[in-house]
Amino acid sequence: MRGVRDRDQAAARAEDARELVGSGPSPASFTRETGEELLCASFVSIRRTDVDGTVEFADRDEVEAYIRASISMSPFVGNLPPVVDEPFVARSASSIFVAEKAT
Image (cartoon, rainbow, N blue to C red; front, side):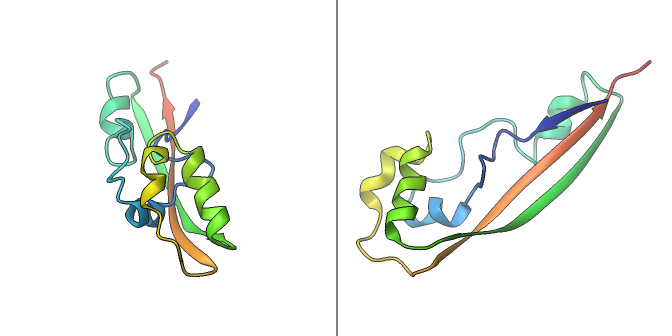
């Protein structure tokens, strides 16, 4: 068996942060929605487990640091409002795929 982590998530994928800066959806091609389809050509059995939660940023500086560290969101850091709710709580969504090859 081989585990495949969803590339659409980082340590914490915060969709609310994307909405905050207007970066749009993640550009990743391997997501929880597409993962099974992409894996089915190479594996006979695929199981997806969704791990959703929240990420809390204490203040605007933490939100900005997170956005700057994101390859896809960093170009939009200038869109970050001068004031954000503190703490800023963002949804996170990750998926873990476990796939098995035929024996």
